[in-house]
Length: 385
Image 1 (cartoon, helix red, strand yellow):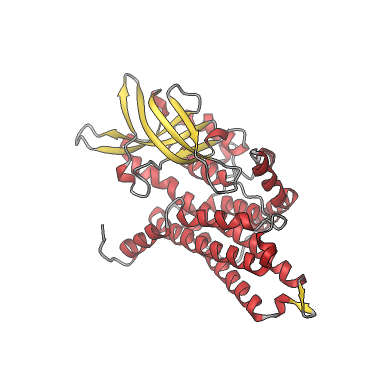
Image 2: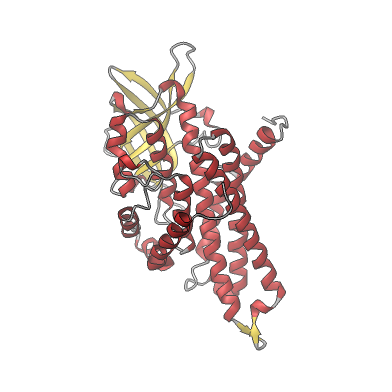
């Protein structure tokens, strides 16, 4: 890992930033108002190869890794037009399938995920199983050559816009009788699979859903990877999820700070810009520092993951997600405060980010659970549970 950005990464960053600016925050806000998806941006990002930069070349991807994909999401977010489903479709699902899927699964899904012509959601959270994945009750039982999958999931993003959902379920270990995690690809039109929108106070084109799986009959090849290695395969997707959530938060923070800095340069009070006052300038400078520090940890996590060091990447990905979420919340708050009443106006578009920035603190894992992870795994302190 080098702290000097490569020419390839710098060029990717500049190109994606230009795409994001062509759409901008108003494009996303209009989609929210009209109840639409950001399909045009998604399609163009796919055509340009940005959605699949982390996927293998032989399946239509760019041959890069999470480092490159995080650049794409960060720059789109910094331009005010993030694509939240990137956290799920190419990062989690694309990664899991490319690492553990069969050849048939790879050829069926990866080219479409890379091009943006196919999308996949990810279903893990349940009403009684959030951070504690050991309490997942969605179960799959063998039925001839296939499976029957039953259970419920909540807060699943983008199901309505996705062709399938990668579901985390559990199967029974024939040797021990205990349930073990496994991953299944479930088509959106599969009989027994239904979804209901969960109303949210978050202004986002990507909606949240509750899923009901009522004895969904799946073919044998719906199982992704090895039935006996489900936990390893699951975490292979969760580490990219945390890294990409950090990228999403950092992009949001950069957008908010950019609006605040522009305002502080031009807003005149007592014959000088308000940015000349340290009460305005110093908090913005502090937020900038926090965002840059979070970005460094995100880059470290992406580097470790792409290098194949899953254990070290897990620690760094959690830290990156924590740091980026905290930085985003403070950056958005300071941006709104800098603009005063304008910070809450529709015209400036910052008020929407107050709620959105909180999402990065609680999803896909809360900051308290990350602190648990660091205190137990890194510092070696005893568990409280």
